[in-house]
Image 1 (cartoon, one colour):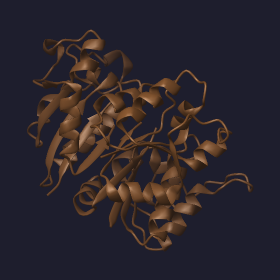
Image 2 (cartoon, chains in turn red, purple, cyan; image 1 turned 180 degrees about the vertical axis):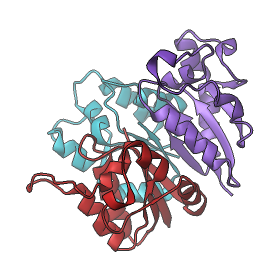
Image 3 (cartoon, rainbow over the protein chains, first blue to last red; image 1 turned 90 degrees about the vertical axis):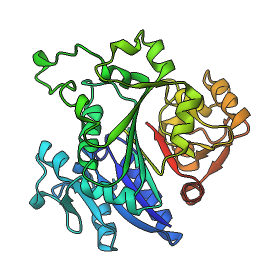
Image 4 (cartoon, rainbow over the protein chains, first blue to last red; image 1 turned 45 degrees about the horizontal axis):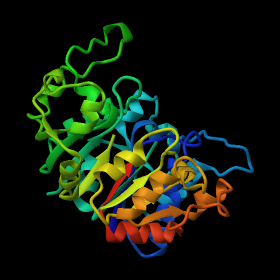
Length: 118
Length: 118
Length: 98
């Protein structure tokens, strides 16, 4: 089944990004296709390139980048990104900045859309 | 084409969810989907007449709400219990809405393909 | 429809709004801080037990364990993992009550 995901919260402050990641991992393990992961609101900072968490903590941006490398389309909302000073050169590899139209497409193409937020 | 419903539950101004939720509607209007919105819990205050955000320096809702219909979001529902619990009446709202009881809201949600909460 | 709730019922009325609107037999899944409502003997236990009359109620095991609640859950709730979460989403269109 094609599953789309929207995240509305940034890293660490909220569990949203962690739950979304675990959910996507489990969905992929079951053979589902991830139609796209749309980062909206403060969630745009989940893929901040210069993120440096303590070594014994999970690296949230790297996790999303690795998922992107596996072919998952990770889309950072351009309008939300601009508000928060996020630019293409400030996001991790294997993720991209695009418009809310991408979220609309995810909603049209995916059979399920799950939102994680706070 | 998908039936997409925006379920607004957050109050305006205190957090950005209500505003960024509106921005989603404006973009989605350019795509061929069937759009509707529900305002429940504290989000009913987003629709209130007489909001003046000048002193906050935050963009208000009152210019944008009347154009939702032009952007394809033709049905705007208000949860009756949320409205009454907060001392609001139908004529407190800045735009025409359809006030629906709990069971009605549940039924409308069930008919959707995708629900995006804000 | 699958109703996903992530808020502690002690802090926000998301679970109560969800129960009020959810159609009979729709499953409810408690994740993140919503699992705090599952503690046996807590003031929110009655809300969860009320929900169980009309809905199957599920809760994420990882969130329960993280909060030290595994040995003290109200009865009737099905504890599931992320893979089961995916199955619920496959079976029902989801709505998240944040």
